[in-house]
Amino acid sequence: MADEPTGVRSGTPTDAAGPQALAARIAFAGGVISIVLGVSITVLGGSLPRPVQLLPLAASALVLGLPHGAVDHLVLARARGEPVTRRDLAFVGVLYLVGGSLYALVWFLAPAVAFALFILVTLAHWGQGDVYALVELAGADHLETRFLRVLTAAVRGGLPMLVPLIAFPAEYAFVAGALIGLFDPAAATALDPVFAPTTRLAVAAGFGTLIAVTLGVGFFHADDRGPWLVDVAETLGLLAYFAVVAPILAIGLYFTLWHSLRHVLRTMLLDDRANGALVQGNVSLAFDRFARDAAPLTAAALFVFIGLTLSIPATPATLEEAMGLYLVGIAVLTIPHVVVVTLLDLEAGLWSP
Image (tube, rainbow, N blue to C red):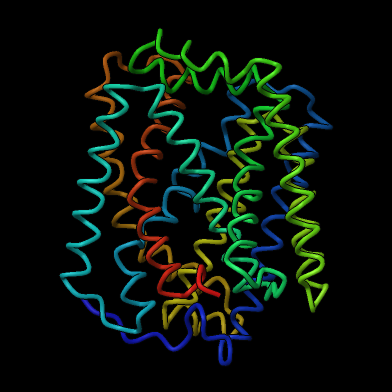
């Protein structure tokens, strides 16, 4: 299996301005749609039943969400402008098998610890995804230092992971219980202190300060105020979004239309054919190319969910338990995916400005 070397990839903006600008517009549009859709549904529909809130999360199994990591076996070679070799495939395959299996074992041995680790890893990963979008797509020159990029990653990842904890503690506890309860229902009580009012107040004060400091320092570092204003608009928009939209619905829309879409666009810019389609303005062809690349491993990921279903102490019998199983499966796949994306960041020099 081989790909031709990629002509446009992260970190080479001279000939990538056209497709990168289009990717930036698509990413921003997806973000606006997710926020507007979530807020509109909340305002018009009020408190929706959980089965309805779960629809975007369920759709993510096939639409962008689960597939966004299904090209991990291709992206590192493409980022280097090299053909995809069997060694590349073996590296990613072993990474998923070993990394995913070890983390799955943690769920069986210490599910509350595994859940906390899932939240922390997701916070870091979703934050690094937004830093890529700001730097490489939006051209954010205010993120000129590694320190500012780390702060921004903490803010962007903290918005979907921490704001719902502050605004919707009961729903957050419900989701934690749904995941942990698949392995040991009693273990969820270990997280009770996290949902206490004093803890949430401390998180709100600390995280609010982090947001203000990060955006304020960014303002003084910005030569071009345009990308900084995009950063501010997205940050405050997400802050309001996660503060008013029920967490299950909010995360389902965000995971699909914000985080996953941005990563998919990143992979397109690394692929000659998808990138060429973006150069021509043919967005549908670029997505079709991605879908073809992602289809085999998206299907293969089903074996992770089958394995979890057969292994957990009790077979999921309710919709909420099925949600828990899906999120545990996503968690198991996230660990090796984060390693691949981190290597991709290093290849692009994202953390060495």
